[in-house]
Image 1 (tube, each protein chain N blue to C red):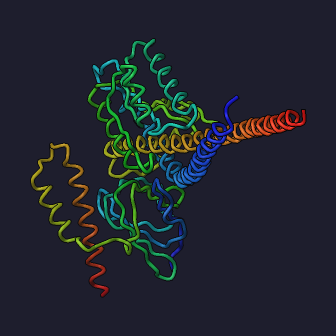
Image 2: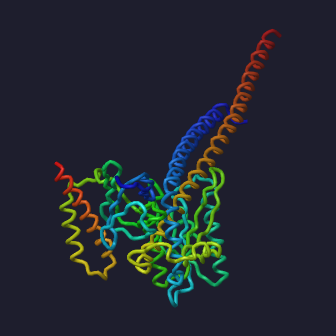
Length: 290
Length: 140
């Protein structure tokens, strides 16, 4: 059995680890709250833009076919995190990215990746994947509209230049603090309108459009991409913080269990020592009496 | 007294204005336009500039917007704007230098260069900020 001193030292070390994990949990909880607020604040913009984009973009689906002679490639933005210690968040996300790439590969489409977050970048580098770009060290916040705008510009550029025939984003959908689901959302080419929606909005003259539909399309398309990417970033950010909060909560609980076990062991060791000393004393006294 | 309608000024970061106004004046790609109640359903692109809202009893508010889209649907106006700020909160200290720098930068670029749209955007923003500055000066 380990010595009393060694056990005490271990308890102290586990306790300080526990303090760190507890603090990280609180920080993650605060950031999660902020991320959820941002999601909520974003909703009115998202809804209004979807309404306009749906009704105007839908009238001109032929404008968004892949460029002629576009290379048989797809550009995937993978939204990971810069920091670890968030459980299986990155692992699940990156696995889904790989699966999506494999599925596209079966259809003969080669995947080029755009890594957001250090963890995603490191993973793809290790796997020797073709990288189209990267954005790491997105501090203090991942979900900024400026980042969404840069990503949208890159997707549009590659798509228009015919470097890819498909573009999309893989991100984690935030269901709750304990449940995140990685999803792939194809952004380009635009999804075909669902039949029932097409019927409902059959009248293309729904809006008076100025300057003209054709002139408004590039702006709307860009706005639509920025909107979708910003949404993905916000969801990813909330998921990351949720995953970290849960991971750190588990770590704190594990530390508490460990401290309990070690304390028990320590008490036993101390009791053993006392018993041994008592026996020595008794033994000595017996020897003197004899 | 004019009839009021609902106006929303939304950005990805949040809603800046949501309420009843009697009139709204904004800068569209084709020029300045105004919206009153019962406007036809309408979509247009916005240029960087000032949006003026007239609330009831003649109170007005101005926002500086960075561009975006304006939509009128069922008489309600929604301004979808990447960035917007209340005109009163804008720092106009270096507005003239900024405008000058933006003009010079744009003059150096040809319209085929990739930086051109950004420089053009910057010039429009600088012009709008200068406009705010001029307003502030005249109120003093």
